[in-house]
Length: 274
Image (cartoon, rainbow, N blue to C red):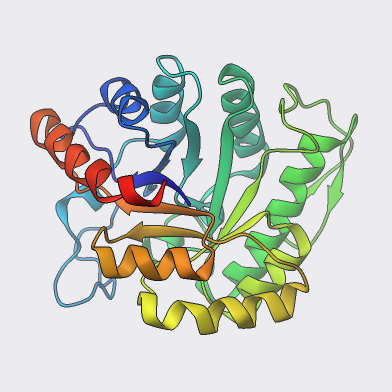
């Protein structure tokens, strides 16, 4: 079982150029960064128990932060956890992911989701009622931009005639797409274009049932990468028993010294599973 971390990086936290090498030094092989372009003042997002934490308001752009980490690392996987496709222009996003993949030597992972802070999405012109269809079209368009010489796309939400779009990703046919969520539609997306399932907020004891259902829909042994995982032994034992490919341990948003201390704790917790 492989290990990495998932976190929110902000203007107040450890920086990506320090965090990236620190992960490699501790044998943690992946960094997945959250994305929120902004949070509306007074947002009524249904965060469990209280208002949204401070890091949601101050999140760095994930692709710029991952590029900074790429420049000072050699093997670290660089992923979004998750990129809000429903808040992103697909042509620009295709170029950003392809550029990260090129500059990192083929280490980009595109973790995606439909988003759940609805007023954030509305500010991007997205109707929450159709965000699933929008996400699917944008992802299909992104894949076309990555893989075709003169891509074009014609849909209900995305429409463009043949274009030149470079760079193309280093990875072939394109960077892996990790799909977040746990709905039936999530599993259908996995079957269509996903490389791995990226579940979060599912108790470890319940994850096996979801994995079984997911693989029934996809019809394959789709890899599982657990996002935002706890590092207690019981949870890690369960993930190992379920055959989880990678565990992305939750790293709190902390200043540099505190974040490095937390990384030491995370690295120690997963030593026995390597």
